Image 1: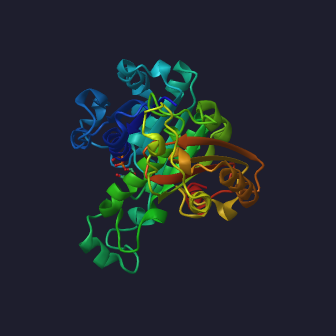
Image 2: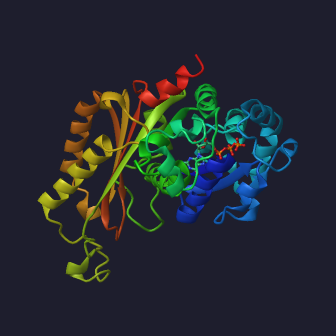
Length: 382
Ligand SMILES: Nc1nc2c(ncn2[C@@H]2O[C@H](COP(=O)(O)OP(=O)(O)OP(=O)(O)O)[C@@H](O)[C@H]2O)c(=O)[nH]1
């Protein structure tokens, strides 16, 4: 689907930049922008062209907002239409979905996100989704008090900036985005940190994991021109049906498994008869690879925890070299997922990747019980 990604604030900008670096020429990424009040943060991006970066909010004097969410909201309200216009050269009217990426604990991005979501919904028919990083607990703790391993940890890795208001900002922004977006995809930074890591040291790895999942989901139905069309094409309306339009929280699970790239058509001489017929792949190997990736995508670490694995709605996309996409195995995987999630509303699609060297699965779950970390955050403002 044609996706337009807008990264707001420091974290959002870095994710937008990373998406542009890894997927800038992929057909699904129709537009990318990074908007921030902070000149230095925008200046530190390297894949996004100057024309895609935009500093807003003169009142911030070119700096960040140091966690002042009220100031961020004010700036967002004042500049939303200006930000909407700053996207215009990338034909946002052709986008089939918008994705606002933001660090929920901050102020510049989190403050502007609700107003921008409202503005985009007013201007365009396409759904507006939010992808938001949840803060880690150590951000709100007093400096130096970073849990039992705290002292050493801070010496070993870049410091995580102290943001006393991060949890409350995140709770307020989650609520505001749920009211204004079709769906919210939280990414739980804390769940993705390894025991010895700080957020400052791990953020590039986390951003890579986030980008991989965004691309796996939104790029799934989009095959480069001239390649095979998926048998069950995944389109923007499938994603919309899976995640709903009521601002519910959705989780993305993703897994890949390396497989041997079948030498497409080699048995008959590639292209000689225009057959492009795939070489044979051992059926049991294909079945096992598909079963493994679907289970890993479901039970492995998702962008946010799915309590008891349960969901009202589920979307499954299985990708890989066409010869590996065994129909029966995918159908079995769907049945397994239906039981696992207690959901009977499972949509699915294929993502054939010619010359690919991995089988992959993306599992989206929406209509979840509240994840523990989201509940903790919400309690900070009750
Ligand atoms: N995964 C990830 N999370 C980040 C990153 N940078 C910041 N965060 C998280 O996002 C929150 C907001 O940080 P920023 O995006 O830098 O904040 P901002 O929107 O620029 O707002 P101010 O700095 O307050 O003006 C932090 O509290 C962290 O939890 C990043 O690069 N990756």
